[in-house]
Amino acid sequence: MNAEIVEKLQKSEAYLSFKAERRVQKITEENNWNTIRSAYFADPNSGKLREIDIVSRWHFEKKIYKNHELKLNITLLIECKSLSNYHILTDGAVAEYSCGNDNVWFGYDSYNRNVRLLNILNKSSLPPNEKAAIIDLLNKWCFPGDASLFIDHRPQPFNDISCYSSFRETNLGTTKELDSSVIWKSCLALTGAAVGYENSVWHSIESDLLSTIDYISTYKVNYKRALKSLFYPYQLLNYASLHKVLVVDSFIWEAAGTIKQLPYFRLIQKTIQGYTDSWVDIVHIDSFSDYLEKISKHYLTTLTATGMMQKK
Image 1 (tube, rainbow, N blue to C red):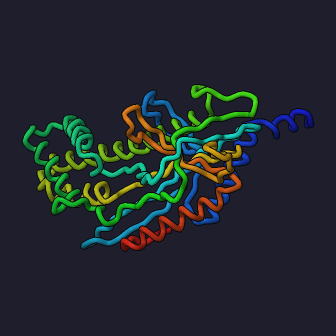
Image 2: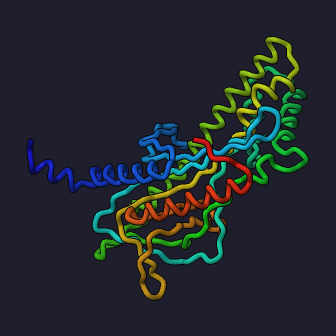
Image 3: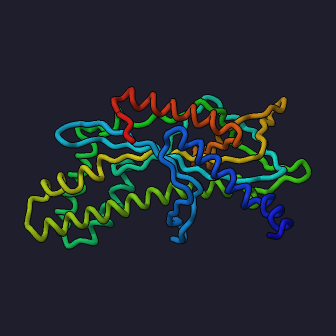
């Protein structure tokens, strides 16, 4: 064995990232999160497969009526990055800001939902009036009495964290520009993973809906009854709440006024119009256990308070 090569490999960014991934995986599993490493998703822009380091889930259910249950997943999308000899500075504190999670549900975002539904239904041979009837029916099932199925059971986001809109990466000698920033690229990758997650859910929706329509057409069954038994419980009653996390080995500092060290913070990505486009929690690896304990307690407490029960 070449000792010199081994020593260099052990100091490499790739090896240190793997080491961090193993550590984070161990912590999530010790906190009873169902965890997988190196999950792959289709890039929403190129369609190419991309990797995300760690995906951890908690599953909750609540029986609503007959044999139907509301099903909800809290999903942590986690990237681990080694930034040897670099520090992260934050500024632009965002006070009293409540951030929502990335939510993936059939009934979420009415405009895009109906556009996607129509695109799916256009792949069938149904006449226009039946397509419109199905869209109307599914919308009513998502919002019985004009209220969302999940109105009382949506996960409240974890917001007990300092929020900032600006950051810099520096090794005390130079500062990385945005285009070369590891933090920025990782945040964009996590956002892409969230979109990839949503796209995979809609791929499942399309498959189930078209196969149900084929069943209706082939056997001439009542379309409402078929959709209620074959599509409704599997697609309308499933909700995913995505929480994006970047774990780093760089020290984190608040740069406003007196410089002070932070265990973690939330990077708020704002558009030029001032809207929040996305956010990512950035956590020092030595603080990840404490951070995970806090968000775990938050989700367990807020969801069980709505009657949702955690399932293994």
